[in-house]
Length: 292
Image (cartoon, rainbow, N blue to C red; front, side, top):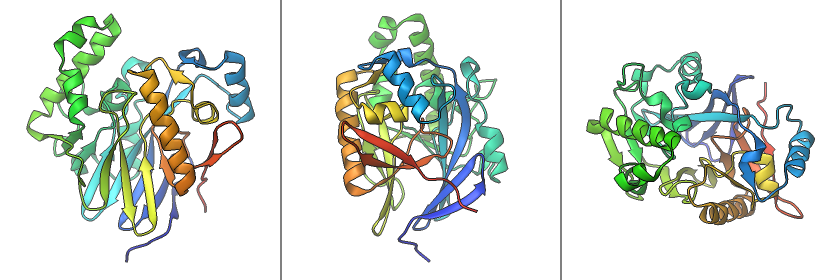
């Protein structure tokens, strides 16, 4: 039976909060945290950013949480992003947590990439450089592929940036037979890509529609959700084009608030799902807790 409302599906109160939209069950699966600093932000003072985190009850204001999303339905098992794989001593919990949901890497038949930063693709290769999800088709935006395959960009990058380029290229090569470029149309019925440029050239969200219900997995629109929703002009150093990233963030925050759109994001809290509400200066994030 198709459901045309949001339904909370509690799997595990710590890691596995799900929503059902139509035929699809969408589960937030934590990959863990990565140590960072709010000094990575520009457009807001450190003291103001720390105050927002404190008021939101965040004990370690610099930590960034990493979510991936599991979509099951219509005989599909889809993973949105693949976490860090433990690179740079960050995250690395995705495979263990997927196992806890009853899903093995071999079950995944589609992987949708929001973009190709290491905390989103690091989990795609094993220690030998081979595909972890060997039965999966890998989808990404053509501008994303073009960027990471650009030799000029590679040569201009810092040493750390060059490692990121080489990781992306190794990943493309390992999945070459199953690599697919998004074409702006539905990937499967009910799931469509949404181009959200700025953080990277091909940064992409994925919208799931069913009747009057919709969910947008918005990738890295925010890294510090409470800060960057309250102050959408605050950018992070990882943005490829900070001005464009800000424009995209402003647009999506306004749309989410206006349409009362359910949001999922790779750096939302472990709760994984939220609504966006307008405030005097910007917006605020309201997480949806699991229900027993």
